[in-house]
Length: 512
Image (tube, rainbow, N blue to C red; front, side):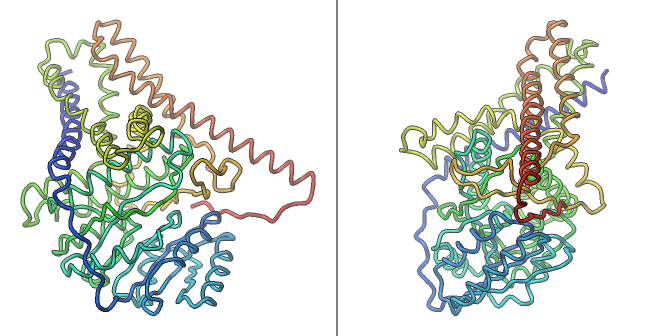
């Protein structure tokens, strides 16, 4: 029982470290807010050549939207090259080819680079296209992004004016934040990361990652850092850390926003989170030793390791739940000093909610009604439940990242949703229900049993904490089953409609 008690205390303390770090980031942000506002650098005398790379894989619904937005970019046409890096196996390839031909006729320097095989996934596509890139700077946009026309005019001068900067990241905005309570909760999490975390990491000189899209790279930096490598699913995080280990630093422009689509389906969010968790831990396994042994200040190294290992919090959350029931049943918490230590450490749990609240106030201050920051915080309870309910999904992904075997890149489906408009359930990329829901159901019942034991043994202080697990995993089951059944019904209805009349053109989908 002593071993279980010590394991429980260690897991709680490590979780508190992550919570306390969120609190630290929030405090540092509030201290420096308004002190780093600098005038934008003037336009360069000679605009550098820029290559815009658009990695695409089976993006039937959003490819035209992406290419239309990129075609509207305001930049000297003789200095702009566009590469569509298309690995698609469905009708997306034909759509992309037709769009490229149309924009080429309008005078754009645009290429459609279609790979029939997909080695290295996104990293492989970026690496394969780089030799044909003519730009000194490389801009990257994923398929679900819609950059504003002035994106390059606002970002290129900043990177060009700082020769030591190897990459530049901008803030993600949201095309469909108000589509549902689920997309609103995800927007909260993303805003917290970009508004507070990325700002503090950059201004303090700490390690911070490139987010894979809506940013620029200096071609020289890519080459110097070893190029795009496909041994992790987070090729963006990997390259940005390798660049910083080589002495480059990054820039973050929070005032420049690039809108993107948020996954409306819980299964799509789980897939996205799993890919990020696996890739982040692969990068941790690959570079943690180099970060820890670098010559940068100790605070930089500690923050870098916390950043790379952020997804370890999910196995720790799961471990806490699994250990709590036997400790309660066998009175493992009785007269245990760890119980009181953990009570003091629980203050760290206010870190993440405070971080999200500060980000919303910063973005939406002065707005009223549903656009105001207080209204947007109504999605915070759901975000808390999501953070708990994703523990099993992300724990599996973390252990996948710890293995040395390659992991598959599973794309996040997009559906061309904006604001409250559009449907996704009847589209071919909608995801079916998976077996993960059985594990989440088992954990819901386990957490309920733990609540019962806590009440039986008189440990009522643990009940609110345990109810987060009950509600979090329960929500995964209820929403996952409901959305999965809706997808199944939509597909069955489409099949019956097709069999009753003329068949519409077939829409293919290759699942990775």
